[in-house]
Amino acid sequence: PGAGLALDPATPFVFAAALMRAVDGPVISAQPMIVAQRQVKSPAEIAIIQTAMDASLAVQKAVHGGLRKGISTTEVAGFVDAAHAALGLKPLFVAVQFGEATAYPHGVPHAQTLAEGDMVLVDMGGILHGYRSDITRSYVFGTPTPRQRQLWDLEHAAQAAAFAAARIGAPCSAVDAAARRVLGEAGFGPGYAVPGLPHRTGHGLGLDIHEEPYIVAGNDTPLEPGMCFSIEPMLCVYGECGVRLEDIAFMTENGARWFCRPAASPEAPFE
Image (tube, rainbow, N blue to C red):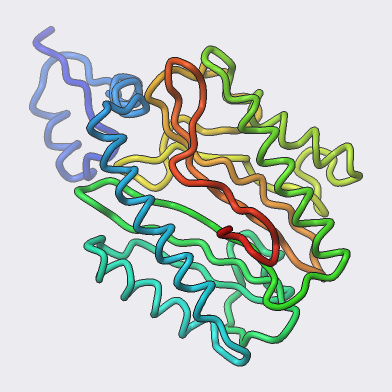
């Protein structure tokens, strides 16, 4: 046979089909090779992501400072996109949820208006030189109830446990398991059951918003220096609220580091 071809899975079908007809040799997927290269970031890539994350954190702080009773999720989303653009990032996405709507990981199909005592969830990202930022903050507009504080503190503990489990050589699944252990010991779950954590704990971040390595049960990929990934073990309690604290970590020779300082408390998340 003639020369073979390794195809990027992202190649549009019309081009892939033409290339496959043009070669005599075997055609295989280039995905394993691409994943191996992309899931480990260079210092330059990490520096770009750091700048993008710093910008998105600044936008999060501005949102928190500008909330008022009666503001709509649509208004907040518009501000987030404009603020990212003003800071030199291409707006990528924004999800804003208030009150009971925060319990749904991917939002609800209708806008909400902010009321005193609502849980607030703001998830956002932008693009800088092709690289993504991604950060979520959850907090209470007003004074948290004991129940809101309990759920927030539990989410905070689950995120911290997952971060502590992110060690060089540890499998990605161990990071996911650490977060679920904290939630399970508090009576949530088990596994992916709700009330609890109904999705993976995290995902890789780089040229795509979701890429390898995935922080999920069954992924035994060992963590190594240069890997960047989110830690966001969202706690969902339908009928009440949800809490998602999402921060991006990157692996160094000495273990995991945060790009941004994690949230501090449900009433003062940026102190």
